Amino acid sequence: MPNSLIKQVLAVSLIWATSVSVSIANADTSFKDTLAVQGLKLEASALNYQADASKGEALANQRCIACHGDAMLGMMKTYPNIKGQKAAYLFKQLVDFKRGDRSDPLMQAQAGMLSETEMKDVAYYYSTQTASDLSK
Ligand code: HEC
Image (cartoon, rainbow, N blue to C red; front, side, top):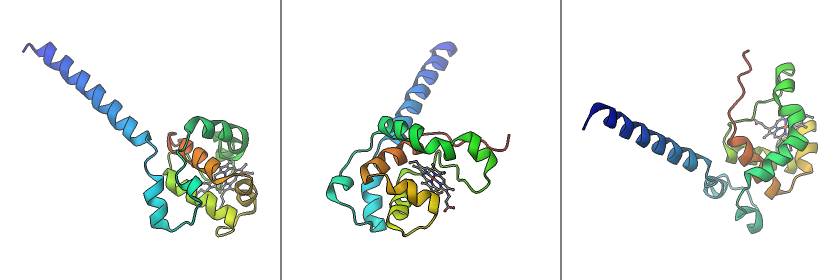
């Protein structure tokens, strides 16, 4: 095989492998098992709900971006950068805020307005984002 053809084949398989691993990373597979392990008692409807990243994005742009967007993160040292965090972790924090197992006046008010299926959507959406580089 000529060298250029080998390079082409390698490049194509690399692209293929990358797209496969990206789609696996983005697949909403993490919630169910993780929740069982964490012992959150959820309704079956929330437990079996398949998170929807586009619904989560709409919600994030409407309600969360004011505080968790780059502009505010740059100013407020205690506001967490939640992009790229694990979906199940973010989801658990939201449930904890809503149930009062984690306290923060701002976030308890926010989580209080969300259903558990909306929490899954928004947690999943943030998990698919790349964490902002706040060092600039
Ligand atoms: C008014 C500002 C504000 C808004 C709006 C807001 N947050 Fe927060 N959020 C905070 C602050 C401040 C914290 C840190 C709380 C603490 O110190 O415990 C936080 C923490 C969190 C955490 C925990 C992060 C971690 O690393 O443990 C999650 C998850 C979260 N927010 C998700 C959301 C989502 C989803 C929305 C939109 C529905 C939202 N927040 C809207 C201010 C806000």
